[in-house]
Length: 636
Image 1: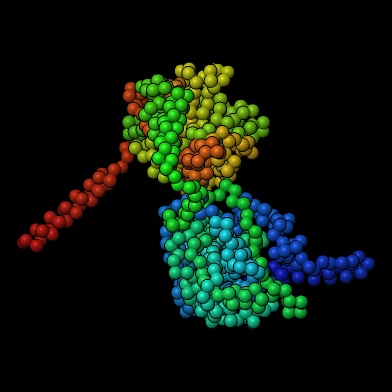
Image 2: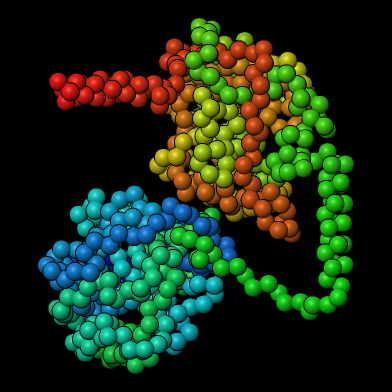
């Protein structure tokens, strides 16, 4: 899409021009020093071809080389259905009262600015309202190209972008460099019948034949330009598709296309020029940016109709079909037997937590983890003092290596040691690794729960007792391990996890690994580390050794829904040459507390959860009392 506020280009141009005039005046004052001033690239000019084309934009506009650029290729069989992407509420889209439309040729596209009372957009999974400021077009010289986005390897002859800014900001220029400051609706065009509504715009193209031409046109209801079905769309986080390429755009690309005739499309291709009236005419066409890498981003769709499965490879049918199925079934049984023979474990049926004790007897022990923390039954322990974290803010000589082990995402820590001490534990413990457990939905995922409430994710930072030389030596010793557990809740984007999440595409499959740029581990933690729960338990995965001191912090870590979705869908439990199966629901169910106690470091951690019945009881008594009074007043 074009930079919102292309109408701002005149402002940038005028500022640059004033600066250049001032510079020339100064240089002319020193007649012997003036040689040449290049006016060609005023305002950091850019184009769609040549030395100022898309492949060179990043040299002048560094953000154009970012990781979250637009447009992208939407492969519908890889998108994820997100039921939070509900229908849009389009306020003012069907009205023209107090709305003015200004049509212009800015040398890059045809743009219609919306002035006066701007239409508003809400819903559609958005957390705020957005105001429509302008719409513009991208088209190609031939019918097989022109759109910026592609859908299943198909480019369309034209694409329209309706650009909105968050109502938190005064306009496009204020919002364009803010996170989620812009919202753009993208629509593909296909050649079909004449489009009467667009003819009301196209009929004015002779009046904007050259760059900087503009004309006021009769306002048109914005909804009349759109397809009838807006229920199926695609959503991703991206950027402006023209310089300065700010990564501030929530993109919505609709599946249903807009029909336009061949004649109308040819008017776009040949009636408007990219040059000024005094220059040789050059058709304004092929004004689209090439597809950009998706990198670690996900694409979501509003409903199952947006997820189109790839056509299976056709194979000849024959009488051996039943035999083939039988052989496949036998192979599956054989593979299952081999898995069990190799003592493989997982979270899936057949090798899940309920079977672990068969191959790993300690998993059936009496001091197993995780547990459910009953805050009302927790015992206050004044010995549970604050922790001393040594090296947790250090990045020098520390290596972070992230891997997909088929069960979780794990970051191994090597190099200069990080240690913890205090917290009611007499020994010092060395940091070994940290990993995550998450669910396929927000109501589950954590291993521990608080008062029967599960959280969408839990992080474990694993330490081993410094009395032992290695983790393997400590794992079977009493108090050999100490694990810090952090629960997650859905909130704002947590950029401290960016370095981890942005590399998920490099560990998409089992056994994949990648080195991270080291960051301070303490940055991942919540602020309050003084209030926590303590109990003695086990590893939550085989071999389930009962050697773990557990510390569960009360304050949660906040992470966005989009970041959680990347955990759920960007890493898989299978090898690269196998069918993809998401790592999700990688948590063990809670285990009996049995003879153990849970201790708390602070009185604020000991409380009785408020139930709905307790809240409603006084209200029920009040309503009953009012009812009795009304009854007696009516009777007497």
